[in-house]
Image (cartoon, rainbow, N blue to C red; front, top):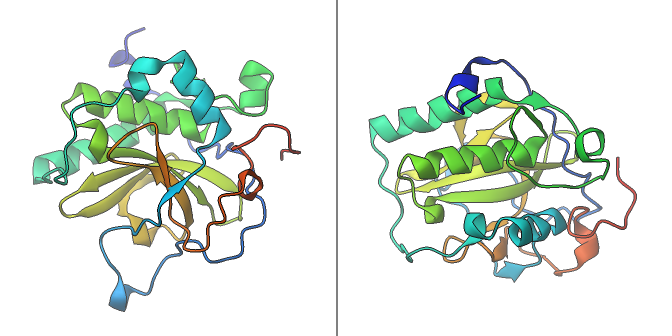
Amino acid sequence: MSLASRFFLIVLCSGALATLGSVDGHAHRQPSESRVSPFMRVYGPTLPPFGFVSFCERHRSECAQGPLEEARFEMTPERLGELDHVNRSVNRLIEPTTDQDIYGVPEYWAIPVNRGDCEDYALLKRQVLMMRGWPASALLMTVVRDEKGEGHAILTARTAKGDFILDNKVDDLKPWHATGYTYIMRQSYIDPRVWVSLDSRDRRSPDLLSGVRNDRPRH
């Protein structure tokens, strides 16, 4: 079944990325609307999630560094509509299922065909948007703690009008500060293989985030 023809199925979120370990509470939280910036702030390099490293080893082309594009991607009404359409379409396409159920392991990042968990949704949205002309520097895999304090992966669209979130839990496209999530880390726009911290107190310990290593208990 082609990608386009599968866009008519309906699903909601699985949120199956591993539960985050205890973080000091200094990560990038939703700021008050009166002083919000449309752009996330980053605090330097950090360790990438373990599942992402494994994904890049298996799919080098998906993590290849393309031409460096310093400027943020220009956001037009058509592009905004495209983000919204892809977010909703992929959310309807993929059946929410855990990595344990699909692959028999607690963490396995993959571009899904019909089933997957949160990072799989985000990877597919990234792939579809890149096929439509979006540069890799504008589509950044991002790890947060969700409303339950659990690990969750989303896709950040880095644009000249701000950072927008594509989320398998929510069909509506949202500015990053409107999700209510605690932001932990995301890909660098300069090099997709490098991750940067969104936490001002990041100690760069692999134990801060389950998913960086796969030898910790998972929920």
